[in-house]
Structure formats: C-alpha cells, structure tokens
Length: 297
Image 1 (cartoon, rainbow, N blue to C red):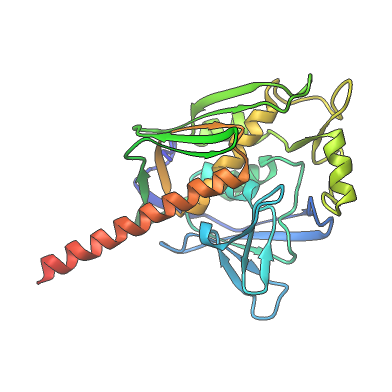
Image 2 (cartoon, rainbow, N blue to C red):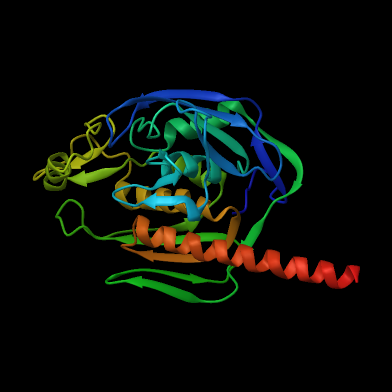
C-alpha cells in the first residue's frame, strides 16, 4: 500500500519496541504482546515466547490455521489467534518488518479495534531500512466468490478498498465504505472501528465456548433497541471489516496496489485473496530467478 507520510519505496520497521497487555477476545486469557524492530526482509512474524524454544510463526497466508470469527496462525504446536487487528495496525502504518512476541495463544483484544496498536506504533516511531519495499500490483481483474459473498480485484495505481456489509438487522443493515488506504486514513478513519456482533450471536458464541474474553469494553453488541456503547462512526461496522481486510491482506507478505471491492466478505475470503497474492509473489520470484540465471549464463 502506498504510504503518504513515508518513503513508499523502502522497507520500514519500528524505531523502538512497545508492549501492550490485555485479554484475548476468544480465550479470555491475559496476555502480553511485545512488538520489536526487525531487520530488512524479516517481514512480520510472531514468537510464542511462553513455549519452549520460543517458536516463530511467519505472518503469511500459508500459516493460517483457523478462520472461526478471527484469523489464527499456527506452525507446529505453536498457535496465535486473532492476529488481524495488530497486523492491520502495522501494515496500515507502513511497518513491514517486526517481531511480535506473545506470551499466550491470542493477541490481546484491547478495546476491540486497532487503535491501541496504532497509537503504540506511532509512539514507538518508524525508521526506514536499507531495502526496497515489495509491492504487488493487481495486474488483472478477477473475482473470488463464496455464495453471496465476494471480493473483486482490478488494477489501479493506488491501494483502494470498497466494502459493503449487510447483517440484516435494523441497527446493522447495509453499510458502505470506500477510500484509499494510507497511514493517515488508517489512523483516523479505520483504526478506531471496533469489533461487533449481534446479541443473539454473542449468546451463541458464549454457548460454543467462544468470545470468553468479550465484553462491552472490547466489542460493540447490537441489541434489540440500541448499541452496548455509543458508536464511534455511524458506519463503524463496515469500517471494522475494512480494518480486518487490511490485517488479513498483510498475510500476503507485501504491499499491494489496485482496487479491491469486497461484498459481505469476511476472513475466509480475505485470506483466500491473500493466498492468491502470495502465489503472485512466488511466481514473480521464480521469473526473477530465471532471468538472473539467463543473464548469468
């Protein structure tokens, strides 16, 4: 994604580490997350520092293990759940290289948005690295469908998203958001948007052993006659889905440029798109190797 206040041609990392503490939205377990600077070409990766050997999990689509109500990564026995909000803050603010150390199985929910993560990134500072930033251009139009849900991609000079949701509720009906994605837009228009659910869905999740850390402080619950807390935006729900999309697309391991139109998409379609972009990265790497070998010969 282009970065209006950063040199978009370079890779970036944090100037200094930051630490945040909270509870996991689904596990309900207390957890600390410490995000540290990383060298060029490191990418984004998690480390389960509470496990023997502090195993690492690259934040890449091939390590996605579960998409039930959030995005989870796994490698061997190490897992990390609900990674999308923190990844959105890093990617949305231009940080391409960081090591994310967690001492539990889930990233803390904070207030259900990416705002605490985004503030911590800004306060820690960002620094350019002596390496060229990887950018994927959406070179052709294609569509990924899943019933009445879809994502459509097409070429464009900048990173742009259009997103539509409809939860079939008088207080959570059709909402639309469209705009360019850059650090200023992310920080002010997307990062504060909180996760949400309908009250009936919250009760079903609790009965299924999910959302054990969910409460009115880290999620907006849509009641029969109102919301559990005042909305930060009139269209907060679709803005949160855009936030989720940005975090899930960070799993392609590169920035992207083009137009993405998402209709009622959600994590499974987001990650399908990230996987397709990962394939494009691999294909481009293969072509580069072939050209280099041909030149050398």
